Length: 172
Image (cartoon, rainbow, N blue to C red; front, side):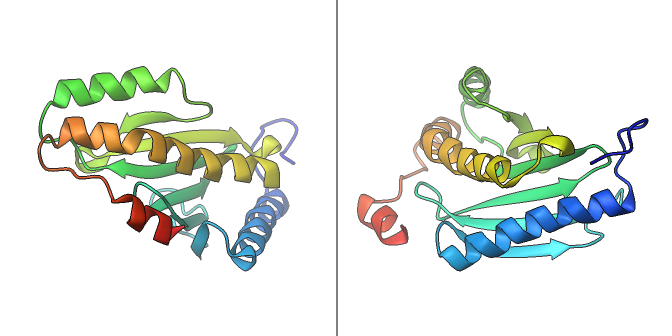
């Protein structure tokens, strides 16, 4: 899929990867599952001009989980804004998230713009197929559902309340 000497995507290979992502997104939207919105920005990355996709998934602990996919020269970068930067127990919040990193597959918690917490990862374009996209989206949802309530409870002590089970069930 890449130029065999440099590993950098050429125009034909780039379009083939874009077609895999677009096809997967179209099928998932039509299936009516967790994916509720997709927006492809052909030159969406402000630095590289690389294609970007904004995917909105229906979550349990958070009403929506947003995943950005950015096609780079050799990899597909994915990121999810997990939570705003903690306001209380900052060290405890980071300790919890860093310990959780050891259990995550293919992504990790990271500090992003405005001190927000992100789940980030990247996949070599050679490995990108529908199964890998399923894994990325599924892991983004699963890790958010698993870790969000505890991280918010630590980082926003006394201010964060979980969504009631009735709201979570109605969203699904």
